[in-house]
Image 1 (spheres, rainbow, N blue to C red):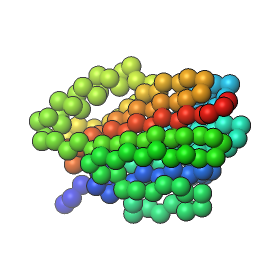
Image 2 (tube, rainbow, N blue to C red; image 1 turned 45 degrees about the vertical axis):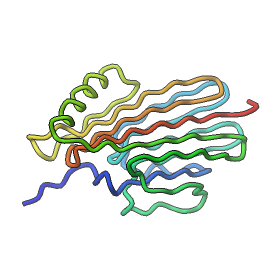
Image 3 (cartoon, rainbow, N blue to C red; image 1 turned 135 degrees about the vertical axis):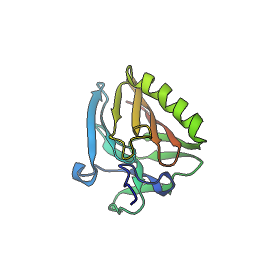
Image 4 (cartoon, one colour; image 1 turned 30 degrees about the horizontal axis):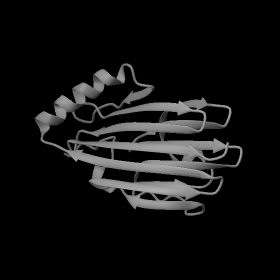
Length: 184
């Protein structure tokens, strides 16, 4: 009998960017945190496949969805970018406001022994992370899926670094998003 993992298959994940707010009920968030400066505010949530970041300024809002299963459809209204997260991907998106988003992702698939070492290092890092969540493992002999998010908040920018482990695939999804505001 196959055991269903809490995480989707890493090869079936996508990245999407919207120029609007998205209803939180569209995502199964397991933990959330807020941060703000005088020029912007953000809410970041860890979800089963990755994370969702809502970034708001006086001129508008963006929603980043990183690691969403491609099998689960989301609305297309306001969608500016949609691509499958593969081995490595980078994108720069200029949006009205003026807001610029730089996104990069990389999936590292490694052998089981290396994955175990990486997971142990990430578990240690999770103790001091801005936000971290350890999911229940579907298999007792495998490490628990783990998500770690680090942020660097500046008056006119937000840098979000995320690490999401996928024990069933022996993979780590690494993403980096930089939100920049011009003229604020």
